[in-house]
Length: 486
Image (cartoon, rainbow, N blue to C red):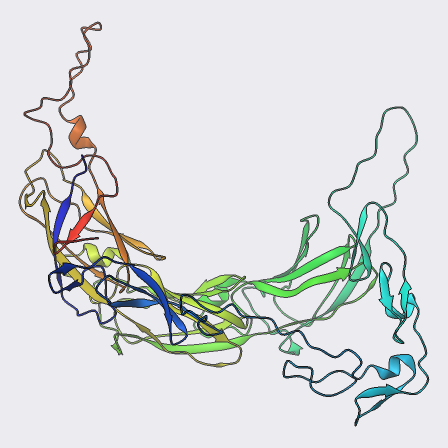
């Protein structure tokens, strides 16, 4: 039989976007009844029709039936037979006529003159079939059994067949390597001096999974020269996150991420690398007002790059205005609130949320600028009862509640003392929550008595008259909010 815990909740802040605590007329509201997309964002709607907090911003709008975000379609330029004009994706078709000894007619956007076909070497192709520039397909060969053709280049595969060695003999081995070198810059300029270190470059071969780390040192112009196995590479910046802990902002990005993807390195050559960076700063407010002082550290922000690394701001300490300044790789970001849960263990409820969660999503950071961040907050408190009555006295603490924000963090209440009425109070981010009872298993062990001197005597069970009445196993129980099941 499941135990039901009735929680009488008083919401101190009205939730215009709703929480699981809302009631409508005489009907109990069921959370997450319907998922919808409205005005380029997705939301959950409860059974009373109350819109919850924003779940996701839709970069490409809502789908036709407004059930979710519309999947963004990648635009593929269409420039076949054209040497100028619109490519269909907001850009211009390139003029490649000179490659075949022709010129571009800017009125018809076609190449004119005698077409001089290119061979495989001029096309920089080693395998497969390719257009010679004049409309004829030419074959550029095949790769070995231990290679695959990637964009016309033969690259080693990770699933080599193996060489049988069954008898004495001679086995000569030739290691294939390529030497790649280049200059590394930041936004097109020389790398700045960073006393804490500028991070590193990571060359990751995607087929074999092997990688090479190249430190960027601390100062001076930087160039690199590495010997690599031929292959397809992903080149990443391994950032030094401590750069964003300094008093003055770093010029180097503090978060890691991909610089180049799918780069075929199978010949000696030069590959210069430019690291992009944006500087973002802003004020951090609470419910559109200056962040109030608290008894302890108020928390920080966490910037998470899509398909990349994350970096935290400096903590906002316990008083004063809150602001931040970071140097990041450009891209699409999610901004999370990283809370201090200890604030909700104090005697009085804080104004600042004590739980982690997302406060901004789908934020495009592509240039230097200001991004002010406002932290929403609600206070929730109430009585905790056992089967509709005051919780009974026990021999030890009677457990606690754990509030878990959907797609966010979790936050426990204070432990419930062994006796007396039970209440709780928390400061949370608005959202949809699951609430667990975190029970005290020691309650069920208190009455066990094993007589070690009588080994053949079975263990005595719980005295039914003295067994604890508060649940003693941690589990997720149905929980009532003002009569509405959560």
